[in-house]
Length: 350
Ligand code: UT7
Image (cartoon, rainbow, N blue to C red; front, side, top):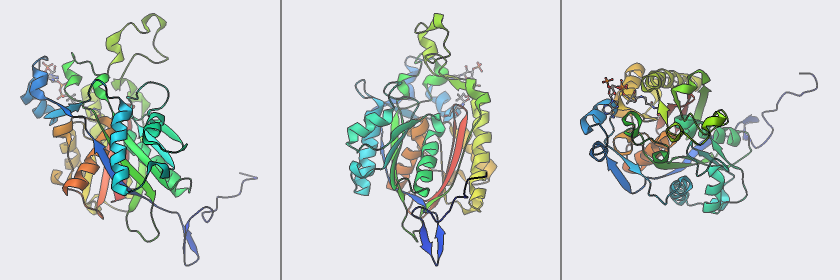
């Protein structure tokens, strides 16, 4: 590396402790969430699909899901959740340094959902961009925010997990239609003051493209054959090899959870609460068993929301903090796996 000087950790805005410099930490300062008003129960689905409330509850743990109104778009859901997070923190959108939106269902393929959100919130001309890592997208966004804050490139970042999955579901396919729901969760990630015990302690993110075909929307992209472009409406919807994704989720979330606590020099016994991505209760039961922790310490919203992909973790964080299942000061492990497959884990003191 001739010609390059090693990075100085004392550069930037690090904290000074007795002559030593430490990297600033980031913390989750406030949360907000939004679920569309309309609720679709399992019985509602059984009215037009060959399924039943009993099958859906037994196989997935889902009781209902929220579905956006016809005139709602993804950035509306994101804006509603974001306003609640900003209000909870008592800060304005103008104070944001960056907006990261994790979504696979933007208002339109281009531009990013995040720029529409920026405009709706009245934020300044700060960088606003989308992250496409499906159900793991929120943890990818949180990792990006943490890295920018640690590097001194931002002090306050809005990270939103938002999905309007009802628009990309084939409502005649019972193997996917019963699983998903719409919603948004937002967090404000801020630079922690020196001495604050709260903060993000470790982040780990991974992707494994060998499983790309296990959960995908096959049509609509640059790989679509010219003869089929725009013709095959069903190929524009979510297709999933459920059992392959199930196995990958149990394996990936187990491993990345252990990896991220080890990266912080801790064990799973040091974790107070678990806030995993919520696709299927059986995945979470398997996770609890493999980690040897009681399922009672998981903050679950799946029964009421279905699988909201990138929104599930921030919705659960916000719900948990408002109904007392989570408290400030607790150490929380978040982990997720989704299409890609992409997966990640973040350990944080709330
Ligand atoms: O968010 C991250 C990505 N997603 C996930 O992590 C989801 C991972 N996968 C899963 O959660 C599960 O694999 C599913 C919930 C999708 C499916 O559960 P499963 O226990 O793997 O069921 P299966 O696919 O093996 O299907 C069992 C049976 C089949 O019938 P036969 O072939 O045994 O006669 C299906 O046709 O259940 C049938 N089935 C249904 N029956 C009633 C599938 N969907 C339904 C349904 N209602 N909605």
